Image 1: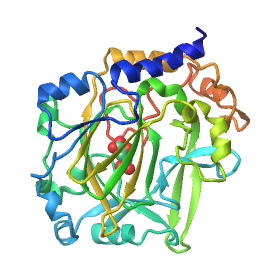
Image 2: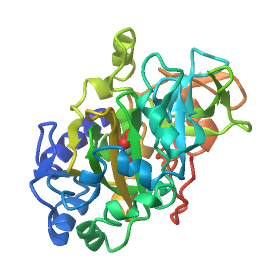
Image 3: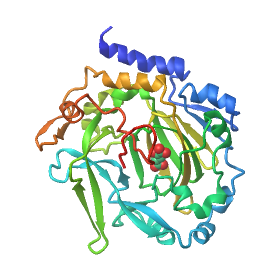
Image 4: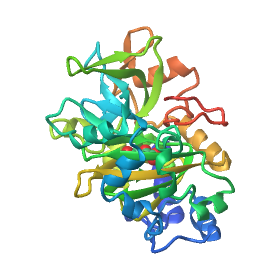
Length: 380
Ligand SMILES: O=C(O)CCC(=O)C(=O)O
């Protein structure tokens, strides 16, 4: 079998043997598992699951259904509001000086009184000057949103017991349907709970890393001027490269054909696992799984979620993943032109070599939200 066929066989076998399914569905549980079940059937197998009826005992499920309690509890809180022109933060955007190539664009982060932040999220629409998403990730629930501490559990007890540690970070996410999170992976075990509205995840196992076309992109940041109501996208100085997934699973109609031909391993390969997380559900999103996230708001126009990041084990699975990622896929060549550090334009494959010296940086393409103890780079 040629190397291409062997990698494809791996995608197939992981679905058949590891995940027990070829259908693009993950396992569903009607109530929380015991710590032992969770550890045996899901964490140790790096296998996602969706748990219904997982948060009905949390005060947040009733208290956050209107804004009254949120506004009272956070009346004097200053929160980090992320502003972008389109709702796509931490995603690829046209390079500011070479629009035919791409850069990795981060949001303008605006420290904002919570009542104003909520109003800005409500007023984000196709015609507004910006799309606002409260998506600060550095453990924001326990800092910026500490006024809501009593509304959700401090940790997910069955996960804490299974994983043998408390969460490293707890984050709150408030947005509307315009905010989309692009494909990436994290070095955390993620317990993701939706309180109101719905989140739509696409999940791709770590073994499919070649299908995500990870390349190094120069990092850039939006800055928003309240006076002019305009955004400027500027490259970081000195230049910093961020390895990021190139695939947009929902390309616009005008880009569809081009994207399908640029990323055939993704579009012609196995379907991603699709899961909608509803109010009351918790998604277990295992470490290293690639995920893309969209959202549908509740009747008031908001989606609110909280997630718990637990440290992952840097074990043999992690070592295998790094090994797999270091193997070039024979069919991935120089489709994408990206900018070299010296300003010349070259192939993305070249760029990886020219930046890291050792092929793609296997530790850097996830969004690192908290200072961590594992020696990974801090991208945000
Ligand atoms: O909810 C979102 O927009 C993104 C969530 C996410 O990427 C994560 O929990 O790692």
